[in-house]
Length: 90
Image 1 (cartoon, rainbow, N blue to C red):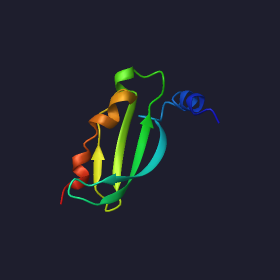
Image 2: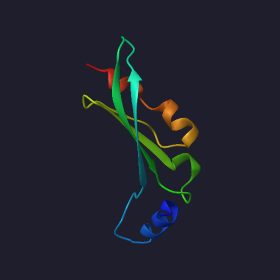
Image 3: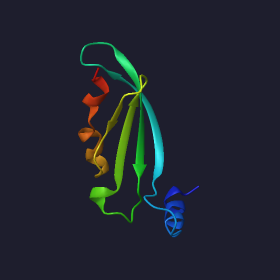
Image 4: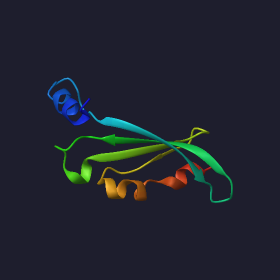
C-alpha cells in the first residue's frame, strides 16, 4: 500500500477533515527520578501536500495513561519539542 497516495485520495472526499496517516512506535523511556516506563508514540502525517511546518504531529502515551502532545511541525523537530515532561506528572 502506498500510504501517501491513499492519503491524497481520501483527502478528495469532502466529508473528511484533518485526515492523517498514523504510524505507531513503542519504546521504554527513562524517568527523571529513576526507572523507566513503556511509551507508545503515535506519529501523524498529514501528507506531502501540507505545509512543512504543519505536516507532522505526535502524541505519546505512557503505560499509566499519561499523555504528552506536541505541536505540529517538521519531522526533525516534533519529537524534540514534544512535551515529554507531561508523562512525569503525578
